[in-house]
Image 1 (spheres, rainbow, N blue to C red):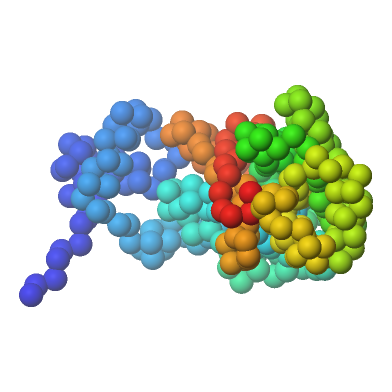
Image 2: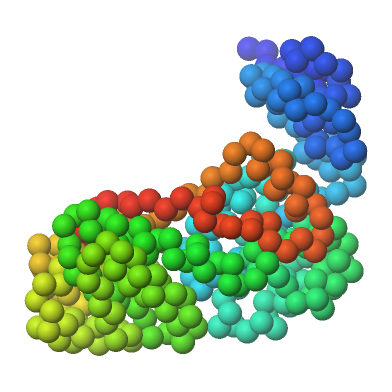
Length: 337
């Protein structure tokens, strides 16, 4: 059986009723061209209908660029939250035919190690763009540009810009539990010093949002392990017999709460419901399976174009001025709540 012929740019041009050059400009996002959006859209739709796939190797040779983009998520404390945040960015980058990959070097290993790894990776991959969550220090940025990185940008301008995004999942927890009929929620968070600022943000957000919903919010003392938390739960439920739910800082704390309830002889969910954040893979394997809050990252077509322009402008601080406008949290309902 003869092999199916590869769809070429000339085929897309005929389908869209434009020149081959226009197809090349549109699909390669060539800067400096004045092609109307209706024409560009017609080209993209024609390429999609025909199943056109660009020859990435040929494109790289023609452009003299690697097409690689490093998306560094080391600002996140856990790999799960890093992956949740960066996965949509990676999908967007792929629509522009970049080859992105996420890096995550926990802060516990030190800022110096992160810098050395980022520079080492840039040396061997020759990325066009490096995207970080918060801005890099000027010395590291200069070093990356000295290695030939064309653009070094950050998703937000300051760490504080992430605060509203950190609050969203906890507000979603409160709304879900309130709608389930719970009137008193306990908050469980780790005493890990590295996570302390983020835990405090979610604790405060939950308290304020619970007050708006007319329900009670009680933060448990920060725990170090499941046994520690089990003791705090026993004391809390003796003091607050109307407490019927636990909102945890993240899924690790929620899984710890499940085990703590087991140690304390507390049935989940008939006596206490438990809900986490981040949709960590082990949550669905727990018993009972963990209810959690995940989130998606949604941009409309016009925002895609703005995003593409931003990442090509080195030094851009704050690709997203307000992350809450594109982050959409949602509950993954399982057995624990």
